[in-house]
Image 1 (cartoon, rainbow, N blue to C red):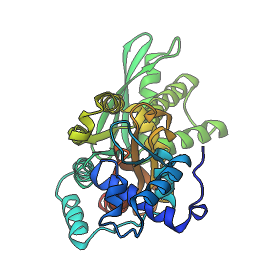
Image 2: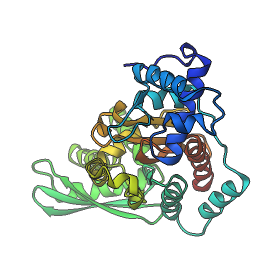
Image 3: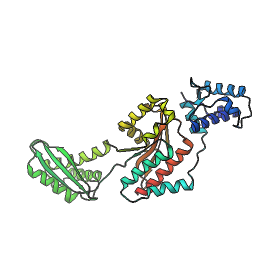
Image 4: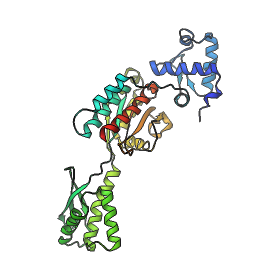
Length: 347
């Protein structure tokens, strides 16, 4: 069900709807007609306000929990508010400075990613998440060592000094000399290239007949490079901080929802897949509750933004996850600013 356009609501209905949503997001409790009639600036009687609330409920924008006479926004209502009515609160100079100082601390990029996840948790009061950039190590050398007649250990050394090992299945009847030939070829011809570049160069040389490799050695090189390339794209790494923030007083009244959300975070892969879907977004994306199948049970929201390197390439995604009553007006611009700051930090 799509939410009605904001323009279809009367000015009176828009004002009351906005006050209900903002009041609920601020307090976490439903907003009643008595509250709206006193101190909200609405020049209407409680009876008139109740009539408007009933109209908004009929449109599917508000709901009345059984335990309260007040109203709270539905997921449909939150989507209408976020897309058409929300006025974002840009980060203050102090907030921007604090974020940049925490990201500018000494240490490797991994430390900045950990700090980012903690920052997002602090500013949202929910859980912060960072999808780690897929590493594209540049080759320095590769050695292939026989383990048994069917398997070899491929040892990749990156120009950054990193060392990684992978087990490679061997074609039938590979002679020991082919392992040495494959290792020498990679170190001499493919050094300094990323895995993707190395694979393309090798395939071009084989196709043109310029490679001095025999069939067995060529197969080993191809398998060795493929193992790393597939592994890098198949397993995104997700850093999550601040799960304890999800267990606030309001959440304890709906412990099953919270348990479902924490289970989602523990699995990580499904949440990582959701963040990957935000990689191509031009700006911050907002997923509200059951709009995404992953959160149909937990009723949670995700605010996510891609972050880029200095060349403008998207290298990862960051965001926050929490209950649908997140302070969207504050958190959305903070997530966007943090994404830009992290991009400058990692280069």
